[in-house]
Amino acid sequence: MPVEITKRDYSLVGKDTKAAEERGLADAQWYACNISRSRLKELMQRKDGPAIRDTLIWFAALVITGTLGYMTWGTWWAILPFAAYGVLYGSPSDSRWHECGHRTAFKTVWMNDVVYEIASFMVLRESVPWRWSHTRHHTDTIIVGRDPEIAVPRPPDLLGIALAFFSLKNGPKEIGKMVMHCFGRLNPAEATYIPDVERHKVYRNARIYILIHASVIACAIATRSFLPLMYIGLPSFYGAWLMVVFGLTQHAGLAEDVLDHRLNCRTIYMNPVFRFLYWEMNYHVEHHMFPMVPYHALGSLHRELKDDMPKPYNGLLEAYREIIPALLKQVKDPTYHVQRQLPRAIQPVTTHAPAAMATA
Amino acid sequence: MSDDWIEACQSGDIEKEDVMRFDQGDRTFAIYRTADDQYFATDGLCTHAKVHLAGGFVQGNIIECPKHNGRFDFTTGKAKAAPVCVDLKTYPVKIESGKIFFKPG
Image (cartoon, rainbow over all chains, first blue to last red; front, side, top):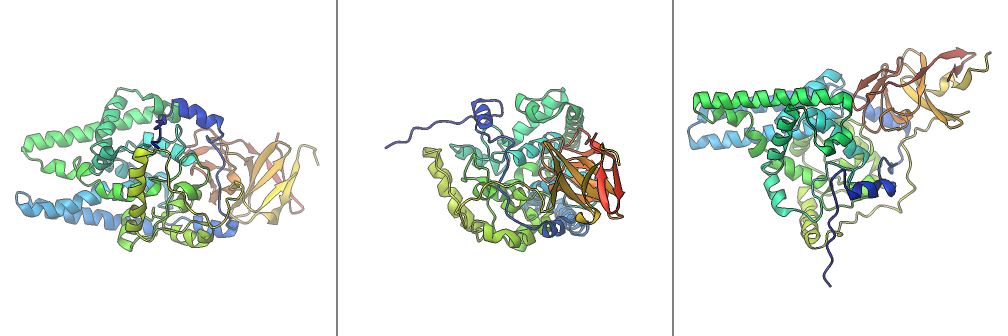
């Protein structure tokens, strides 16, 4: 019997927004696995060392591949270094944007902020609107009508997903928003999560981004060469594919409108190279449950919590063996989703309240 | 002792560089202990999303909200980093006979 397709409203100002609020799904309390306060405190400790090391390696790799690209420009050999440069520019910038946005990557606050601004530019995300968008994503993870970062609304737009591998869907949208922000305007969805006091920063930063992009385009025109654009601007498109390969695994095909990150996020075991590029965001359930824990401690947090977690995926391949069929099913039946098996029945939702609590 | 002062806990009930939740009636507070054994008190909920700060992370004079990583200087209540924009209310604290008192006002 054919399933009737009811399209849900994924906008932040539509009928599902109201429905989510009425159902108590907005600003709700989420399930949190049990962990002692003292252990959590250990895991929350911030360090500069790992992120400085990783950032130096990242930038060094960009310089090396960029130099090789320059040296081979004009020959077919240039494809190889620019393929590497592009993916290093357009994909790890997502995880750097993410971790530094939470200000957990480095212990030193300004280091988080500097890398956040650079990575935001590289990944073609305006730093201020996306900080607020991501805040909402953490408040209302995959709650329809509330979460602005649902990557695969149902029914899935398969062409849109394919285009996303080279930022051909979101990229132009982001540039459009950037231009709009230059003129001092927000769209209605942004107005729901960006407070008034932050809006001047949105407009200021958009003008800076546009100025940089315009300068690079002017440089390309002046030198009659695509080369400047191969370094800044275009890699946000041609190097985005690995970000999408990683990013789709976070929530695609899983449940909507649940208050338990174990049901709407994936934790995937990955090799050390992928974990470096993705900054351990493969431990995605753990990150959502305890966003104060820095990326370099997520593996340890995972080991603490794994008995109360669904079975992790053993690599990207295993995850995509689930995701691809799930998305294909959702095209015909948007109500379908993967049901994660919890190790035991869902317990009542708990708060992040620490062990120590006194009452008058 | 003035009736305005409320006993929150023993000084040793909070670890160094940590925070404890204290509820009184329908109000909730956060009591902090710094690395050099100073004590502070603020409202217990983050001004951004009303999450209990007592689940957060104390580093120096900063309390980081457990939900969205917003930061306050708990000695002054000043909002230090997005997504918090509104300052936190602070309350006077005193220690007497190893007990922590604060004045919620």
